[in-house]
Length: 282
Image 1 (cartoon, rainbow, N blue to C red):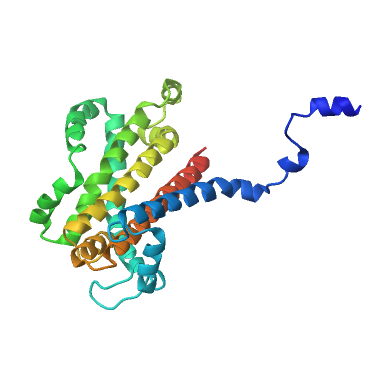
Image 2: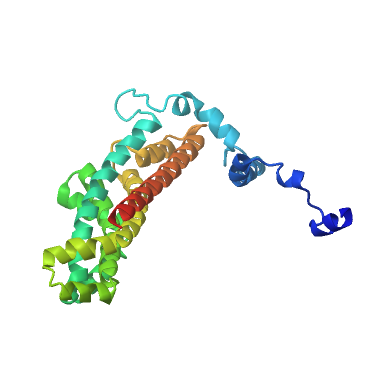
């Protein structure tokens, strides 16, 4: 009996070894190993290149702890604000431009998806405009609006709207033919067809577009604030670069980390809302 049990057990493994790691540690172990490895490589590169050219993670924390990490919401007046307040300024601009892009983009995408004539006619216009780099719109918006804040919001709007339009239109066109045939048999009115068939079927496509757009909007606001803005995380990065000094590179790297973390949070937030709405629609 002992020989049989030993033969059935895979060599080199034991129940105690398999149970050695707790479920919680197994979940976080990949993050700990990979992020720790990234920080280690970063620190080694800093030592090779010199902390003056590339501060390591230890230098970044030491240089920016007071006040940017320890007091993220300090306000000394003017544009001298903590990174938390700078992020909030940028998020206000993103919320305005992205919200407007969501409303207008879903409406235009719905029109393009429901009307093949309009969709075919406007497709070349959309394909041309969506390839224009975001910052190419900034000089035009400044000439039109004569205001840096409004121009930044417009750049966010014009950058974020195209994925929403395209995904909404594609979602409507991908509605199964059976759904459309059933609607015809039941003689649903246009409004009922849109409410009962089109909207539930296109929600996943719409939120895919919204998720892509929120990342583009966050990229656009940082670039727009670098050119001309009073406050915001992009302004902070450009101002730190122009100011120079021993800790400017550490301030820039810390701001970049903030930008990445906020962008990740926005992406996850839109994805979470999309899942909730999709489940509610079903």
